[in-house]
Length: 457
Image (cartoon, rainbow, N blue to C red; front, side, top):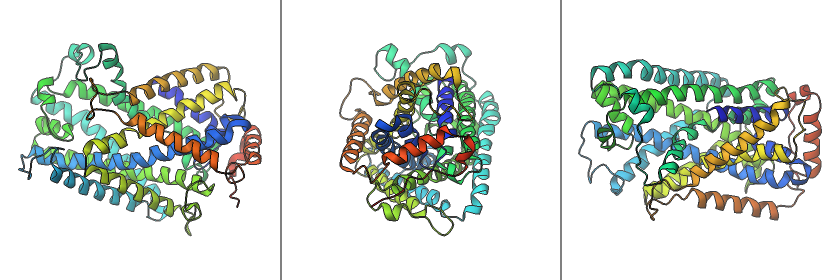
C-alpha cells in the first residue's frame, strides 16, 4: 500500500506538469526525453488502452457474477448445473455481462451536466457498501458462526496454489495490488478539469490513498469475517462473497447486499469508461488507430462519444470469449492490470535514468525525494508485474496457464510494429515533443491551456 502511494506521488509530479487527455502515454513520452519520446509514447499508448478497455469487460463480468451467484444461494436448479463447464451457464453469464456493459455505457451518453451527479451517486453507493460491510456484516457474523481469531487472521498460512511457500506468499499481492491500479484516471480527464495542474494531480494522490486505506480496512475485516477455510472453500458460487453474505446475514438480506454491490460495480465501470474514453480519444486524435478521424471526433458538447462506442464494441466482443471457454475470457481479462503496472514502473524508470531533473516547476515536484521514490516505484511495480504474469497454480497445465504474459507480449510487439511503420510526421513529431517539454519546464500556470499534438497528413 505504501509503495503504491509512492507510485501515485511519482505520477502526480508529471501530471501536474503535463495535465492532458490520454496523459499517461504523454507522461511516458516526455519522461523519455526527446530522443526516445516517440517510441515510449507508442508503447504506453497501446499498453494503457488495452488495460482500460479490458478492465471494462472484466468489471462487467464481475458484476454479473454477483447477480448470478444468487442462484447458488437459493439453490436454483439451473439446467446443466451452475459451473463453467456448462455451456448453458456460460451463455447465461455472458448475457448478464453484456447487459451490465450496456447499462454502464449508456450512462456515458448522458449530457455532461449530469456527470457530477453520476460521480456523486457512485461515491454514495461505494461508501454505503463499505459502511454496511464495516458495521452490519461484523454484527451478523458475531451473531452466527463467529469471528476468526487474530492468530488465524495474521499468522495462518494456506497454500492452495501448489507454489513453493515463498512464492505462494508473494502471490498474495495479486489480490491486493490489483485494486490499487487505475488511480491515473483523473489525469485522463485533465483537459476537462479546471486548474488541472493541481486538481488532476491531487486526484491521483487522493484516489490512491483513499483506495489503499479503505481497501486495507476491508481486507482485514473480511479476514476476520470469513468462516473456517473448509466452509469458505466449499462455497461454489461464481462470487463466493454473495454466499458469505447469505451465511452471515441470511438469504433475504444477501439480495440487498448483492444489489448494492452490483450497482456500485456498474457505476464504477461507467466512471472507468469516462476516463478510458478520453484516453482512446487522445490516441485516436493523434492518428494512431485505424478510423482515427472518426474515433477522435467529439460531439456538440465536446464529448468523445465515438470513443465510448469503440470501448463498447471492444468490450462486447471480448465478452463473447466467455461462450467457448471461461478460461479464455479469464486469460484475456487477467492481462488487464499488467500493462498499467508496467506503465507505472516504466515512467518511474524513465524519470530516474533519462529525465531526472526535468519538470521541476511541477506543483508536486518531489525534489530530494525524487530518486528514492523513483527507485521504489520501479522495484515495487516490477515485483507486482512479475506476480501478475506468474502462473497462479502449480504445476502448470493448459487449463491453469496464465496467458497474461502472452497477451502483454503480443500487445508490446504490436506497439513496436506500429511505432516502426508509422511515419514520424504522423504522430508525436519531434517538434511537438520539444514544445511539450518546454511548456512543462515553464511556469506551471501555462498548463491551464492544453498541449494537443496536432494531426497531420
